[in-house]
Length: 78
Image (tube, rainbow, N blue to C red; front, side, top):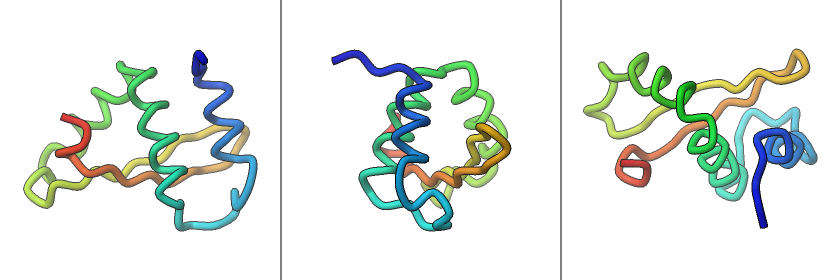
C-alpha cells in the first residue's frame, strides 16, 4: 500500500484532532509523513539541531489552518 502525504494528513486529522497529545500510532503516521516530505523534514532537523542532546524532535505540521504537534525520538529516525 502506498502512502501519500495527503492520505497521512487525513489519518492524522481523522480522530482526536483537537487533542494536543498524539498517540504513538499518530506519531508513527507523522514519522512516515516526515520521511515522505524529506525537504521539510531536513529543515525541521536543522531548526532543532541545538536540542539534539535531548534526543527528541518536536515540530508542527500545518494543514487547513490546523496544527498537529509531533515529537520524534531522534534515534528512531537516524
